[in-house]
Structure formats: structure tokens, C-alpha cells
Length: 290
Image 1 (cartoon, rainbow, N blue to C red):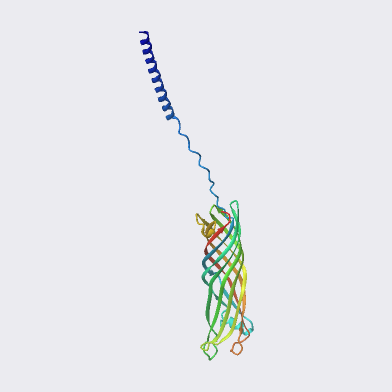
Image 2 (image 1 turned 60 degrees about the horizontal axis):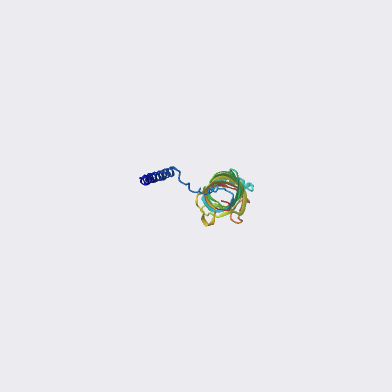
């Protein structure tokens, strides 16, 4: 009987240990479920590069050019010529306004410090600025004679315009607003031809001058760096719109008498003005710092 009781006690003990083990396992599982999952490794921080305008650039431009007040003022050289201008037989003042296409290229370098950008730019462009004007004048009536009309032809042509300018602006990330000014030059052709009374229409006075004129240019514009545009190995591609006023000064051309044509006196002095505005858009390819 004693062995049987001991054996029965062992059965009770075994059951107790089994239940205890099961409870412990269940509690461990529940605790593990409540614990937070192991966190994933942190994602490496990658700094986004900040755009800077510092760097070298080349580009192209195209637009529209027009003269603002292209006047030709003519005066007589000798007394007889002074008289013909005074009486209206030759024109004393002529408007020779011009307008046309402009297109070319530019090269430059910028340095950015804080929000400010300073740089230098050189550009040259073909300009379709040419104008020929014929002014018909009437000589004073001669007693007993017919009133005679005369043709007076003026021409001015700006073949190309170039500038070397400083630029100073303020950058707002990829946008740049700037002012600019500096040296300007251009190839200008001036001419004047005055004819005798019609219908013979014989050329009596002529003069022409082709020269490289110099002066100044100033203006301003806005430029924007396009996101994700990296053409031809450039670090950035920018687009711009700008307007420049240029002034190449004034030039006097002697419209001198042609001997044997019936022209009186020695001739005339015609003073031409070369100034105007270029409004254009451009595309720049920037190299160097991002």
C-alpha cells in the first residue's frame, strides 16, 4: 500500500510539473508577443546638394532689336548748301528707325557668395538692323520755272553687336535676378546720296562710312536653372530673358559734291545716331560646381 501511495504521489507531482512548464511556456510566448519588434537599421543620410551659380558657362541667344531714336541731322558745309537745307531743298532732319532679328552666343563666369552673384559675360550677335529711307524734297519755285523735286537717300546698317559686361544679381536658389552693364561695340555702315531735280535724278552728292563703333550697354534680366537638365556634360542648364540698351554714339558722314553733276557748294554733313534696345532669350550650359 505504501508503494502504491508513493507511486500515486509521483503521478501528482509529474502532472504539477507538466502544468507548470506549460504555463511558463505560454507566459513566455505572450510576453514575447508584447515586446516591440527589432528595429530595422537606420537609413544612411544623404545630403541633397545645394545649387550654386558659381561656375563657367557658354550659351546661345536670340531675340528682337530696335533703335529708339535713330535720327539723321544734316547741315550744309558751304553757304549754298546751308541755304538749301534752310529752304527745305535738302532734308535737315530724318528719322531712320530700324528693327530686326538678333541672334548669337555668349560666354561667362559667375561667383556666388551668400545670396549674391557676381560675374562677367561677353557676347556677340548678328543683328538684322538696316534701314534705307528716301526723302523727297522740293526746291523753292524759281520765277518762271517749274517746281523741282529731289530724292535724298539715307542708309544705316548695324551688322553685328557685341558687349563685354559685368553682372551683379541676387539668387533665390535656382532663380537669379541681375543687372548688367559695360562695354559695347558694333560694325556700322552709314551712307547718304542726294540726287538732282527729277526727272533726270542725277546723283550730285555722296558719302559713306563703314567703321567699328564703340560705346556702352546696360540692362537686366532673370535666369533660372532647370532641374534635372544636364545636357552635353554640363552641371546645369539655365534659361534667361534679358533686355539691353546700347549706345554706340554718333558719327558724322561727309556727303560731298560729285564734280560735273551740277551740285552746288561743297556738300553736306549728315550726323547719324546708333543706339537701341535688344530684347532676347538665352540658353546657357553651366560647367563646374553643381
